[in-house]
Amino acid sequence: MPGEEKSGESELEAARVEARAAPSEGVDPAHLAPRSLGGCDHPDCVAPLCRPCHRAYDTGALDLLPHLEPAWRAELAHALGHLGLIGLLERVTGERWRPEASADRVRPAERS
Image (cartoon, rainbow, N blue to C red; front, side, top):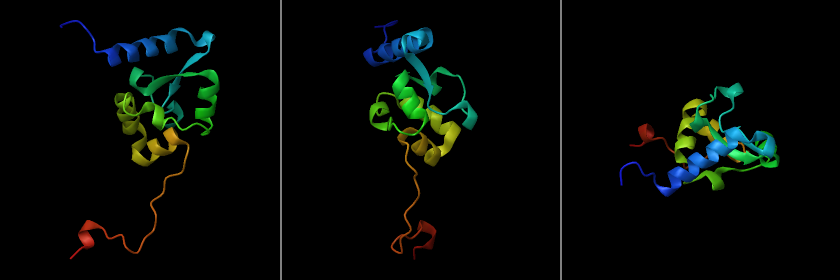
């Protein structure tokens, strides 16, 4: 029906509003791509986290990816624009992502 939001969209917006409006109550807007790494204050650049989870995420101790995918894809896509693929994976999972060196791996241009 026109004017109605899908359930997931309304829940997402409610979570964003709560994160922006109630930081004193323990819900913080956590930047998926921090401003220090080129992130911004656009609503798609943040996700609501409780304070302990926000601290853990900022120190790399919390893997948010299982909690963000698939419901928060717009936010992940926005952060991807700021950080690139490897940077986003490292930020969101708290892990270092490096390609494995392999003799079996051949780039498409090198195939005969």
